[in-house]
Image 1 (cartoon, rainbow, N blue to C red):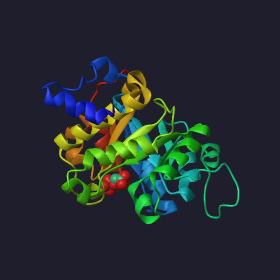
Image 2: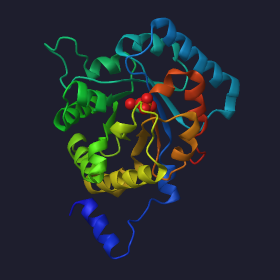
Image 3: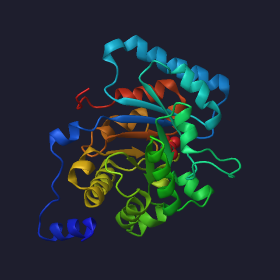
Image 4: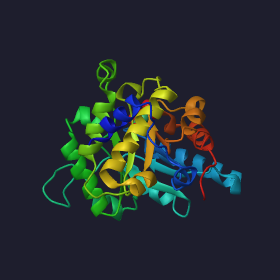
Length: 283
Ligand code: PGA
């Protein structure tokens, strides 16, 4: 039986879906990922990264209790990779092609990204779904290619304003998660819930809405991969995450980090968001 139906059925009997225990939550280390999108120059990329590294050095062992990831445009990957070498900041890309190699002008394979030092790649971002007509099947193929290349795909899902207003949010999210995740991916993926209407709009989803959708995603993951893998999978929230709202969003039990767009372009803001991570993990 599909998990969401199960959840609704339980609710009709006045019962709640079992939440993850503290031990299960602590398996998931918070991930704060910066998605620079199509922004910046070489000089800006350098100064942003150097600023972040300086902040990291200054706080020493008091650094935020989270993993940090930067996803610059393809052309700055090598530069940023060199700058963060030896630090605990990870490198990721914003997209990849599903094929290993071949006649795909202008595209970049997951293997190339791994070769250049990436450990993550974002796939299925709503801007790619919209600008390039990418659907769940393609996103799934990209995520599978990422896994095959040894990368962790960050698979994005999210409803539009119209879908939310029509009351279809959970159905849309369930379909996207089911159809965009590769079979047998276990906990080797990260899922990012990014309501399309919240991206770049300054309007983030309310903590209650985020909590509801993240719990639903966790339920679908349990259905797909079993409880153990689902409880070890990180689910990020993205959509107008800022220093002012990061603490309340990251404090939610089912929120395991943030995918940050606009605010990741300012070292001060990105650092403030990372610093808002709750200390709930075993480092
Ligand atoms: P935003 O973007 O933080 O600028 O809303 C988030 C994203 O698209 O990943």
